[in-house]
Image 1 (tube, protein in one colour):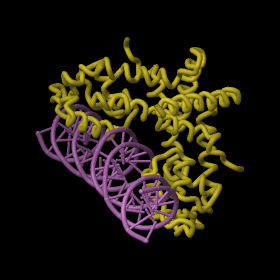
Image 2 (cartoon, chains in turn red, yellow, cyan, brown):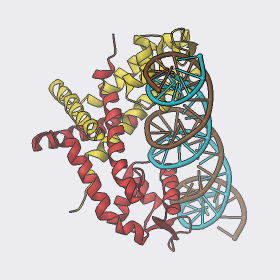
Image 3 (spheres, chains in turn purple, red, blue, cyan):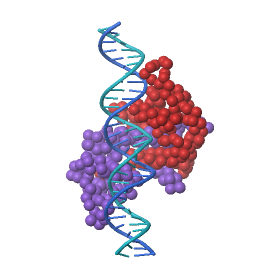
Image 4 (cartoon, protein in one colour):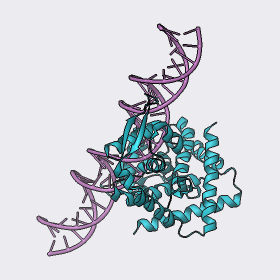
Length: 146
Length: 146
DNA sequence: TATTAATATATAGCATGCTATGTAACATTG
DNA sequence: CAATGTTACATAGCATGCTATATATTAATA
């Protein structure tokens, strides 16, 4: 009957996620970046000029979440929203020069955090860990879709 | 050089944590509970009358986070803050009858979410997953402490 | 014992994420 | 082509979590 928090995957996952965010945040703060902006930047570094809808689809975040983060990124001089000639409802999101210059140091910071987190694991176990996470994500997504 | 989000443990962990929270939230919302209240309730179900400081130590959350969540729980009729006769600075947190009555259904909901998430994994892999998470948490905590 | 330091909690302000809802532009259809 | 529906985005409001700071009480010390 008893439910042990320390044996609960859900709590451990939440804890681990907070630690990841903290470790990354600490390292990208000097760059003027925050954790929530990071995934959006990754997509735009790969392909500039995406729409908000594109970002929502790629990041599995809610539309409102992305809209708010983009507003803060615009405020912080990381992106510009330009009208989309193909569709008056949407806008193309473009990186500023500043944001483009941050790709190398920022991705390096993320790489370092991943390395620190997985330091004690063998290469096999790292791969297994990522695979297990993928399976869990799949199971939870399936549940979410009824 | 390229940094692949889909190969990044950090992003996968964040994604997984959001899915866990969503799956749990959906199931405890009918009980009038939220995900942030849940860990606090688990501690108080185990031992009523803890102080805020006790909760902070047990949950690895910041003091301000716990204080704010407790305020919402008080507002929602889940807890009462009673003066601590041993120390005028602190208060003892006590569950209401309502909160006590929610232990069984709420822990059951959490159990179900864990089961769904780990459904596709063998018992061995589940244990390994929890163990790997523990190692990663340890590594990140070590990093955080310099 | 009066002062100073430490502790427990509260509060302000912010980022991230959510749901729900509003609005303008585009698409469909009667 | 007008009415209706759909789509893309914005906004409001909230929970969770953080840092920084204020306040009140207790502890330590000069």
